[in-house]
Structures are given as structure tokens and as C-alpha cells.
Image (cartoon, rainbow, N blue to C red; front, side, top):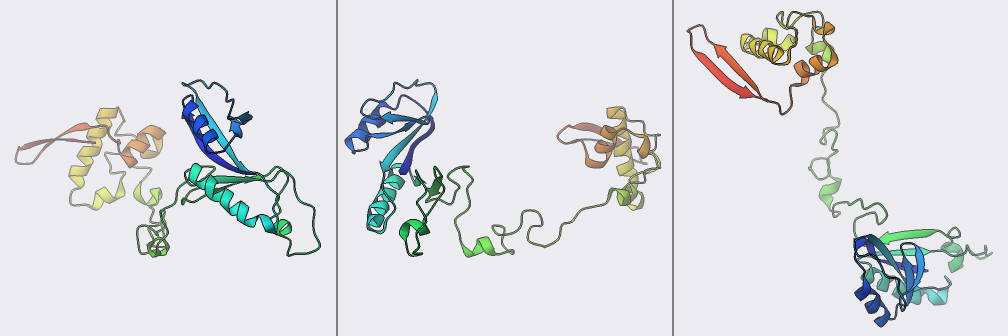
Length: 242
């Protein structure tokens, strides 16, 4: 059986669709999984979502029916906006000849296989970009691995190399800040961050709770903090940073 998914998860009574299907010669199908005669369709609740599958054709998969199958699939694709499903009602008996059309296209009994003209999975809705040479190039954003950006390696940092777990914020538990020309600037930011969140700046990093360690290591996200600095000359600076 060739099926066309005319409606998928859409609200409405779909009365106009039923009339149009009958006018086009499609008299039966399924509504929400139940067999329905489109000449006498059920009254659907307009505020609920419904699925409507149209039975395009039913046939035996034999060589003489190849053209008929092709036409049925074409009709199903047009009606289903590029999607169609083929259901096997009964698995054919094995034939001795490997050239048998039924043998080559044999499926399990009751199996339904969905197909789509789009670069998408008709069952799960996952989409792929249109195929082009760029998709297969690691040197192009479209084809690059999203994890390594096409470099073949991932760059990460080791917390143990960044953090001196036995040092406090006041002692400079963030190792890179110790060697920076801006170490005083960064340390004051760390100290004022501790004041803002009530983190003890005289406690070793290893003794802080997980939330405090995450704030000091990864930042505060979108939360803004008011910072105030005073230079040796007496000038003061204020800034707001996340």
C-alpha cells in the first residue's frame, strides 16, 4: 500500500480536504491511525491536532506493476508535500529466482517505510543542508566537524594547570593572573566578585563549595557586577561587567 501523509499534527476539521480528496478519486485512508472512508469522514474537533494519511494505491509488487507503483509514488509525493510511505501488508513467499521483483523488494509483514524528497528524515523531522562539495570539506564551516571546527583536534584546558587549589583568592589561586602585568587588576576583580557572592577570599580554592569554584573559574554568566578600582594616583574607576 502506498500512503501519503496529507496532514501531520495540524488543528482543524479538515472538511475541505476530505471533499477535495474525494473529488480527486482518493476515497479512503486513515485519520489518527483509524481506517476512514473519506466519502463519510468523521467530524474532527477543530481545536485538536490530527493526522490524515491518504491511501494512494494498493497492489502486488510484481514486474508488470512497476509503472503503476511509480505513478502511485509520484501522486503520493505531490499530495504529501514531498513525503510518502510504502507499507507491506504481507511478506511475499521466497522465490527460487533472484530476479523476482517480489524477492528483491521483500519487506517484513506489516512494515511501513517512509520516504522523502527533501534532505530530511520523514519520521523524525531532522534536516540536512543541500548536498554540495562544501559539505564534504573540513576546510569549510559547512563541512567542518562542529566539535573541532575542522582542525582534527580539540583545544581544552586542564583545571589543575590553571588553579592552585591550595591557594586562596588573596594569594592568587588563578595561576595565569600571578604572572600577568594586570595581576593586580584581575585580583581586585576576583576579590570584589567574592564580596558580591559572599565567597570567603581567605579560604583555599579546594575548600570552597562547587558553586563558588564554578563562579571563580567560569564566570557569572549574564549576571552583572559593579566593580570599583582606585589607582596609585588616587583616580577611581567604575565598571559593570558580567
